[in-house]
Structures are given as structure tokens and as C-alpha cells.
Length: 509
Ligand code: HEM
Image 1 (cartoon, rainbow, N blue to C red):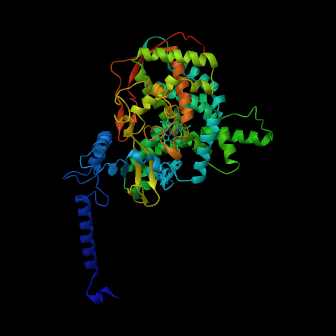
Image 2 (image 1 turned 120 degrees about the vertical axis):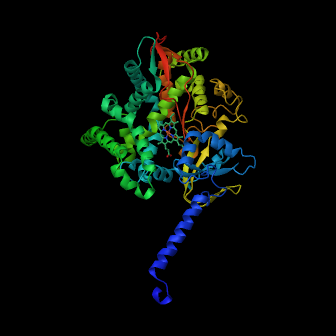
Image 3 (image 1 turned 180 degrees about the vertical axis):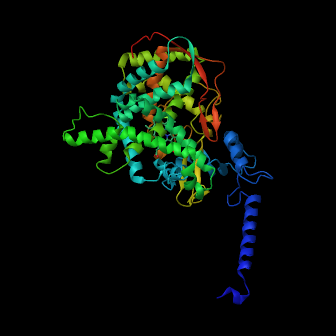
């Protein structure tokens, strides 16, 4: 029917549309929590027109905001609540639900990663949902890397010796801890991911360390744009250009090595098990079994997952023990009795029970994030007690059980012996180990997607700590450096320094 015949003109449509648009805008501005059951815990305040203030409050005080919301007197947010984060609105869920959702595939980690890290935009493809490549990648880490650990401990130790010689020096002097730990972890990880040749390549080591930072800076740079404009913004953003340039450089370095390996495999039909390199390049090739995948992209992805997370744990651990000579003495004794007696074997690492405890305690007080198990719901979900999580919700589980007085004695104190003692109690032998995950300690996540690299990370950190403890005296410069908080992320202080001096090691490592 012709609108003119009804007496309705185009200008009426425009005016009507405009009025509805303004009304919707006013509702959104005045009642921004609308649509989120229970509202947003960090809503805009009066006269705040944009979300930037709420986001800033989240970035600088997420821990307090989350604690306050769960403990609110009326109990309104005791199970879950919505919050404005630097990644849009997310639902923060109480850890009591962790076991229920840990294996529920309606909670998707890959959908979360793709949405949060712009996986469909060039330069960010490592987080594009691709079930085949993801499975390939995770299986190579979960089964091949973890199964090969025993054979890798010696080579890792060799690289630690070489990297410490290069980055840590002899007389008492100050070092910036985080920046000197990073290349040590990068070198040993690269030996396992890419083999001997590339783990000494200065350009690759630079990229493998820098790429995580470039990646997350570019992620944040794009987040300030509305979603629809992000692909365009990515074309011009200097951070995104830098990210793409780094990826290209990485490909130029890695591709000849990959091609050479493939050529060797084809030329020697019996690519002998004894001479074949034992590294991630091979495990990915074998797991792929002829299927095509992005081998260079997988190496960059593992750099992002592995290098900074592991360096962060080692850095924070050293800050925690540097002012505790008694603990250092006990750790040295343990190192001598384990490595000194059995050498680098899996059982040796298992028997470093005090070191394991110190690392787990470090993570308890400072996990890499205070919200874990990040997911997007693929369906409307109703949990067993009736908590509703609508489809498309970004969720994360709060880690606050890890410093809850009801769960741990003296929960706010660092006690390096805590898990060592707990491990002696019947029923707690396994759950008190660094690599175990539970709703009371999930610094490595929990369930289906719990970090598959945690066994490797534990091995790297333990081996490096053994070298540092036996070869160096360490002491804090002033107070223990504070943890850097940025939203839910918690970083060991990148500016923190310690003093070190070379000592004579009691046993050769
Ligand atoms: C101390 C070091 C590390 C920490 C604290 C850490 C932490 C985490 C966390 C919290 C998750 C998410 C788990 C979940 O959502 O349930 C995760 C996932 C993952 N981590 Fe780690 N990680 C570390 C080292 C590593 C290393 C060394 C590797 C590789 C060798 C690695 C590879 C991965 C991968 C591939 C995933 C994704 C798993 C999936 O999607 O199913 N991580 N990590």
C-alpha cells in the first residue's frame, strides 16, 4: 500500500525514526544496565555519557570491584553478575560453578578468543575459530610435548646454562628481573618448539619475546573502535601494522627451516626415529599427517601462550623468595638431593616438592589473571541451581577462592611451605601439586581447556630455578615489588629489580 495514500510522507518516517532512535539512546544512556539481569556492578555514574570511565575503573580496580560485588550485603550478586570490562560486558561467575561448567562444551573458549582478540581480522588470525587447527595444535602440546618431556630436560638445562651466562653476570649488581628472565625462557622454549638452530637466532628470540606484547597492544588499540569499524581501523592502526610486519618477519625466518625439514622427510623415506629432531615442528607435522595447517602461525601462537606466562611465574617466584634466606637454603638442599642424585629425569622434578609448593603458592596469590576459564555460551544455559546464562554471554570464573580465608589458613600470607605440608595429608597428595587444577586453585584454568602446556611450564621453571639457586646469590632491592594489576590481569612487576652475584655451585648442572 502506498504510504502517500494513507497520508504518511517520507518526512514523517524520518521524524518518527529519529524520535525512536533518540528514545532508545536515552534509555541506553540513562539505564545502561538494562538487559543484564541484576544490572551492571560497575555502571556509568551520573553525567558519564560514555563507558570509558567504567572501563577505567575496571582496569585499575577489578579485584576490589569483584570482591565487593560477591560480598554485597543483599546477596544480590553472590552467584554471578555482569560487569563492564575492557572487553565489553562480561558475566563474572562464582568459583562454586567451576566444576559444573568445566567440561560443558556450550561454554566455548575458541568463540571467546575469536571475539575478544579480533580473530577474523588480518594479523589476528591465530585466534580465528578453526576447530581442525586448534585440535591439531592442542594435541601436539598435550600429548606429544608432555610425553617427550623426559628427553627434553637435558637440552632445556643446556639452554638455561647458555642463556644465564649471557644475561646474568658475575659480581653483585642490580638486574631488571623480568627483562633478563624473558630471554632465558625464550631460548629454552625455542629449543623445544623449533630446535637447536633457531633457539640461538637473535632475530627469532627477539620476535618470540616481543610478539605477545605487540599482539596485546594491537588488540587493545582496536578495542576502542566500534566492532563494525575495526577491520578498517586495523588497516591503518600503527600497532596493527607493526603486528603484521612482525608476523611477516617471523614467517621469513621460520619458513626455510620448515621447508628444509619437509624436504628431508620426503628425501629420506626412513626419516630415522633416532636422528629425527624432537621438537614442536615435528610433532605438528606428525599430528597433522598431511592435512594442511599454518605451521609458522602455530609457532607464533605458542610463543604467545608460553613465553610471557612462564617468565611471569618465574619472576614473581624470585621476588617472593629473594628476601627469605631460610627458604632459599631449603630449596638449594632439595635441588642438590634431587638433581644431584638422579640427574634430569621426570622423577627428579616430581621430587622437588618444596619448589613445587613455592611455585603453586606464588600462583595462588598472583595468578596471571583473577578471572579464569574465559568462555562464550553457544546456547542458553541454566545451571543446576537455576542460574541462567543467556546465549552469547562472555563468561569468566572468579579466582577469589585462591585467597579466601575460609579455604586457606593465613590466606593473605605467602607461605612457601604451604602446599609441601598439604601434600603430606591423605587425600591431598595430588591436588596440592603445581599442575593440579581445582576450584580452589585454578591458575592454569580447569577442565577441558585447562592449560595443556602446564607440565612443560613447570619443568622449565623448575630447571631454571635450580640453576639460579645454585649459581647465584640473590637479594631484593628494597621492598618486594608490587604486582601490576590491569583489569583481571596480574603481572609480576616488570620494573622490579633484584641484586645477584655468581656463587660456586655445589654440583654441576
Ligand atoms: C606458567 C605458565 C602458564 C600459565 C600460568 C598458563 C595459564 C593458562 C590458562 C589460565 C589457560 C586457560 C585455561 C582454561 O581456560 O581453563 C591456558 C590455556 C592454554 N595454554 Fe597455558 N599457561 C602457561 C604456560 C603455557 C605453555 C608453556 C604452553 C605451551 C607449551 C601453554 C599453552 C596453552 C594452550 C595451547 C592453551 C589453550 C588450551 C585450550 O584452548 O584448550 N601454556 N593457559
